[in-house]
Image (cartoon, rainbow, N blue to C red):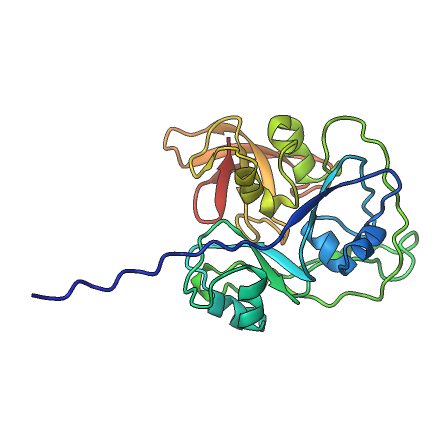
Length: 281
């Protein structure tokens, strides 16, 4: 009798110590990063902000446990492959994410902290931003796809720091996300979701699950769709949109969205289901 094949390893769930913080009167990104012992690049990158972002009182911010990048795990991810891709110490990666030493694979769709990785965001403008168009400086060139569906964010050096003194201002409504961003639009269409999730667009799926909201891979009218970085045009923070219609095949659907491709502008487009596409209901 042939011996049964060995059982596939059970994917492990990363559990980095991610906290949330509610913005108070007088807060600004630079002081908050210092308060939590983080580099501003890490703090802004985890929250989809930039050096010119003005915080809103009551806005929820994600606080990573260490400097680095927070990504969402993808199907077939493994700690060894991710550590090799990002040139990270495997032991540190496992320790920060509270994973057993023998972990072979990771459950997809979960937050993973990459300690020491450099966020792909220009935190500060180069030169005088009032006189210089820095749009070219903010372009992120995506790397070629890596094997095994590993979550990808292009690492980039950060310019010399300039203190951000933009303080928090009162909110004009219940939306906790910066106006003009895709997250603001999705939260305005579904405030019941927007009021319970945190972080940049890519983190909404696991943030929603942590808040007890239903999620899945099937499009429904009225759902918020979450695109992981690099999926269907999403940039490094990911992208979220509001589902306006679903085709009869259950695969294709239409969305309304903001900041794609025009910041502050609402646009419409067709989309489809697949890897890196999830829904919050």
